[in-house]
Length: 411
Image (cartoon, rainbow, N blue to C red; front, side, top):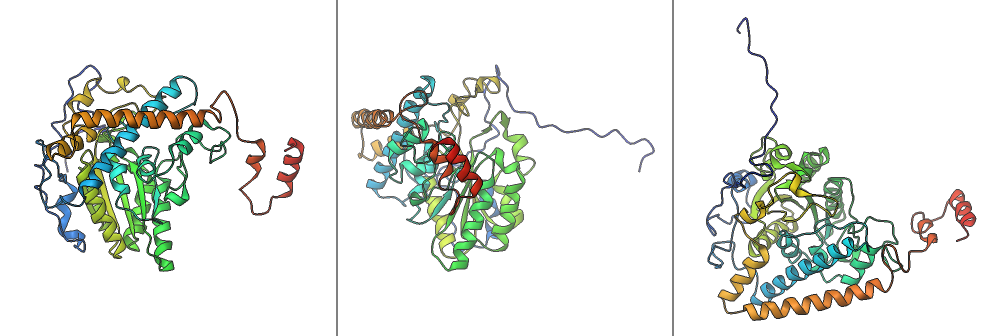
């Protein structure tokens, strides 16, 4: 020990680039497509620690599907997946426009992240339950949930399935395996683990899926969920959507010193993987692997999806305040829609002409749904949920004080 030790220094991580700078993703090593091994589903998590630091990829830059993770989808399923992503993108554009027109108070886009939720949904079965964040509407789109119902909820109109009780885009659809979204970060992780534990206790066959963004991994609920999931080998898949930007917070702060977000699962003995979140085929392959592991009672899996949030965090956010405007153009993993489109064209299953025609057909369907939803009202015009709805659906037997309030309100 020295007599005059040097003063301690407080460390604050710095982003690689700030607004006005040149985008730099050199710190994101991209393995060659098809180069990452696919372990057996019943693998011991201790033997696949390297998968928490690599990135599983199927589609190469030439549009070919290669490697051991390829081949989990039929041609028809791939075409359907492309259509789901295109639908979500078109839906986003119309609802973003509706918010700018004052028809709803708030909206959050999925631009660049469509493959994550759309592909994962196809690995689930009826009765499985997702505990999502606000950027997994692809679970509903790919699951066949009506767009009109989604729009009614966004507009908080008289046909809103949630009766005006939720923030726009915070959907809830039990029959479609979509648990109510919470505005509080990471609550859904411990809920997913608890639901999965209950399923196992009952001897059921259904699994749970938890979703968080990269920033939410800094919340204490994230770690509590991993403790219970690992201890009780809960039949759950825990997803981290790393879109490079939590709201105004770059991942160096959110991730801490773990190297990758997936690596946070290693200390809990949980199987942890990273996957190219802009590769529809890779996302589905990993989702199928992880959900099968849960169904076989082999315990939880933590999956990090390496993707990029192209748009703003929400309609209330201006990303130019904290990242270069051209940063999305430099993102090395490309656009999920374009990548799957090019793959299908190369295989002779698609064409540019068919893509344009399908875009037009999807837009027409979205506009038709939007007109129907708007006929039931929007934020500032038309029908609204009844005032009586705020008293209903909370208690099996309404308490006296609420009965008095309802009588006073005349509803």
